[in-house]
Amino acid sequence: MSQPKPNQPAIDVCGGRAGRRVFKAIATLLPRVLTEGEQNLAVAEAIEQVGWRKRVVFGSMWGLTHRVALVFTDRRLIEIALSFAGRRATGLVREFAWSNSLEPRTDGQSFSLGDAPIWRLRQSLPEVLLADIEERSRDTKTGARRVGHLQAWRLCPECGLTSSEKDARCRRCGALKRSSRLAALLALAFPGAGHFFVKRPGFALFRCVFELGFFAVLSLQLLKAGSTFTTVSWMVASGLALVLIKAESISQARALAERAGTIEDVRAKRWLRFIPLGIVLSLSAFIVPMMFVGSADTKITGDLAADSTHLGWTVSRVESTDQSQRNAQAPRARWLHTDGWVVEVTAQPFPPFEWTDTVRARWLAEFQDRTEVVASELRLGEIDVLRIIETSFDERGQEKATVSHVVFDSYGRDEHVFTADVTQDDLAEFNQKIQKLFPCMYWISARPPSSLVKRFITLD
Ligand SMILES: [Zn+2]
Image 1 (tube, rainbow, N blue to C red):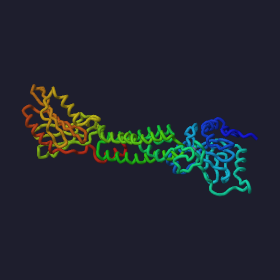
Image 2: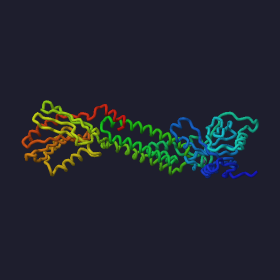
Image 3: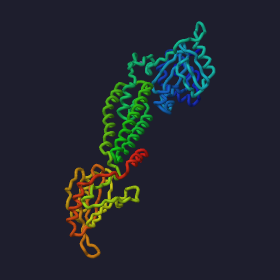
């Protein structure tokens, strides 16, 4: 009987075209693993059945990540891990020797060896093969089935030598295994890097987009956060989400590293050097949004109120019909003085990514040539006040002044404008009286606290 060459499918490639694809995927690796004179009986594709931990770590992708080629030879069963598409061997090779096996079993859909992992077959195995395997797994002398624990051995994908889980290198050819520790560090350092290292480029791209996208959404919420409560809430949420996502990523990279075979020393060193760079990139992606927290907030976070009773002012809030609170022209309050002055109060948030200095500079630039900037140096703690006086003539031909005091709230990122029409005679007295009011002013929430909570819950 002629012995077929090890690298040829001798008896059967199960499953037609799919089987031929699998055989092509392992064609270069298989001859390195087969021993002298070993007969290749059949090749089939299967999914290694894994425990619940790995199913949790990989979610619905666990099946794709545990795709294998099963090579039945006359001496043993060789399991070769495959890529997602099943077109490439990823490098994990294990053997189950027939002479050492417990009951090979199949129900057409799955195949198992005693307590060894059960594979879900993608193609059913031919009857003749099953009979053959059963014969080989019996004790040659007594004909009885062997008992005991079935040992799966890892094989070096380069030379086929049995290796221990602990060995970093093959003891014969010196091939370096892809380290699960390095994979974990890479997964931690940069989104997708760990997955790319373990030869899963598609998965790596997905992880990268997923992690960065998730982080972008959280960053956007931080940029839009208008209150300390919202900011802190989003920071806590981001932190927790980051820990969970990174833990998942690291677990996946570690599990995939075990299935990823060997790597050249030079390339492993290059990956090692990428870790600090990845950490710097990740940290900057983390820190930059923190620097701009609240800068895209387009809501008014507080109204100005004043302890005004003893100064002759009556303050009444004007309930806006515009619920969006974005209409800057809608007055938010009306202040009346016993001398008859009426002050309209409006407020609006700073435009996104603008700060007090830029907003103030714009006011100054806009009104420089048309009006006189009387006082820009009134400073009440963090509050900047700008006074702008525009003069015009009323219908009776009398000169009147429209006085605007613009209060910039650096903390809340909004501006409050107090506007009143005053006669020229009253101007000095009005300015003096309203000026006395500014040190008495305080912030009141523009929204009741309950709506703040609601805003957080509805992620508005
Ligand atoms: Zn080797």
